[in-house]
Image (cartoon, rainbow, N blue to C red):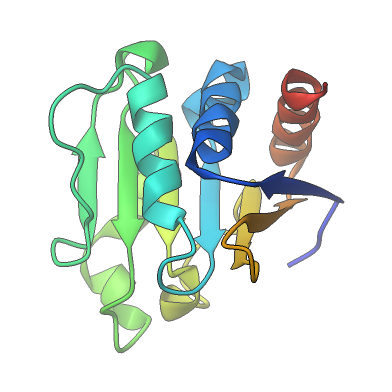
Amino acid sequence: MSILETRPFHWPDEVACEQFAQALAACPQIADVSIELDGGLGAGKTSLVRHLLRALGVTGRIKSPSYAVVEDYQPPALEGLPAHHFDFYRFSDPREWEDAGFRDLFAAPGLKLSEWPEKAAGMLPPPDLKLHLDVNDDDSRAVRAEAHTARGQALLADLSRRLAP
């Protein structure tokens, strides 16, 4: 999987995660991208997804798809396009992705957010953007954003502009 561009970000606290999500939600490219979230347990993957979906106008409960594998949303800000939140943590074989019919979801327009993508390795299409979240000793987060497509590169450039001081 080739990387077109990489940018580092730092989240000193939960507020910074929320601000990152709000900036991401404000980017017009967010309506039709695939974003992979990489990081250990407790790194903040689900927190970022919740903040992002809230920023896109989702109300009500936003559940972790750990058991259901996917949760679907209709964020008002995406103007009719869906958002799918995947959690492949419980996959024991990447072929489960194919058996579940996810190929159609990834081929259709909309926002795709994937936690634990390595559990579906070889089945997922390349993401537009991959976010690596690492927990630092002071409990802050080091985030490395990688653009893997031209669309991801445009999203990363727009996001970086929105988060610039």
